[in-house]
Length: 546
Picture 1 (tube, helix red, strand yellow):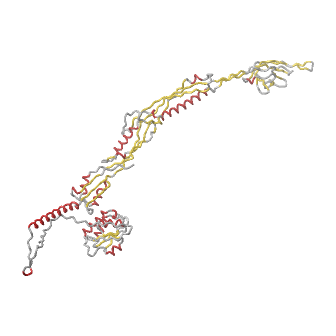
Picture 2 (tube, one colour; picture 1 turned 135 degrees about the horizontal axis):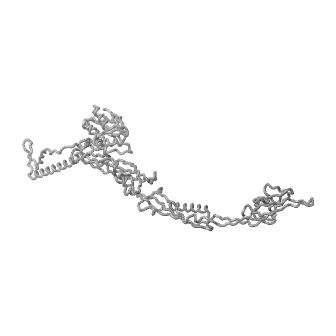
């Protein structure tokens, strides 16, 4: 006996090579947990066929109960350990080479014993039944003869004819059963290929929205756009905040007194005199004061002069009481020059009247401009603004110069409590018909599709980005993805794999997609060459679930 240890990644071809390299008539293959060979019943059928062809006894050793069950169902002996294999002697003493004895260790109570499939009957052509000697019937009665001989009576003709009929019927049934058996055991194969699905994309496009275009064009990368125009109008009544102030200056009379005995004193026109609270007045004319005189040696008679004065500042502040003006002009000596107003000054007034100012107009125009901006935003958000089937590109919205009514200059300076002003403008925005974007994306997808591929329609996904304004152009980013498959020629593929082993057929077809090969009987390891015993079906790939 010999034991061969295999690796997890070893294929069936490695196992067959190890069998053929060994000269031992009894060989055990030890499979580690997770072995690739243990994942398919076909592998064990191939090993069983190799055992029969090489007239050897081959056993499987593995700790996996499921793998042992598959090996047993393929007609191989299976053990849980090398020790059990060696203890069992691997093969019964009288076992025929190439037909191993099936020996399995007792399964734990928690595991059900895998059913052992019987060794399939060899495929043979039905043969005619060999001639059978018809037994002679027992005699109806015996008569003793000399020498101990017994006399027998001949069977009746009717009984012989019934026997022949029964024999013919039995042969006919045997022939029918043989034909049915041949039909059942003739090798056949059913092959299914699900074509491989490939991802296509994403394919990125940058489409330009052009008002001059009339239809979508993939070559130039444009879709039609149109300019939408609409009117804006805002009007308000504003309160006047401007004030027109009207003022007059107070006037009066002052008397200058000259106490200088040395000479005259001239007060020029425009000389400023003031009150103690600094309310100032200007003389309206020049005046000359005579020098003071001394009378009787003890009394001084001053020189006097009267002149009209006017308040420097307009308004009611210039109305001062009598004798309130007592400060002489700057540069004069207050010791020898005095001033006084014998009467109160009068005539200083201030009146305020509402009047439209420039500030009123500026604020009104600013408020109306804000109203127009709000109206523009509302119009862009209103679905009715966009023509049917189009989308507004809001970044392209623009408003022309607003026109005021009436002209602001005509309102300036009007003495009113309120005024009304209206501002009007025309706005424009670009609208895009996005229905043309998806056909462009699909057209681009078709252009990029590899030769011989077909798109799964339900897998096409078109993503349309938000329109952007770049360098004066409106562009839209579009992306498209899909999944595609390659239609296959079933007849050509079937012709390619006829006569190949199952493993070779898998290798020949796996590049085309997911392959399933089922043979009947199960131990058949080669694709039949008869036309009516092999079928190859191409399954249409199903669209993946979202």
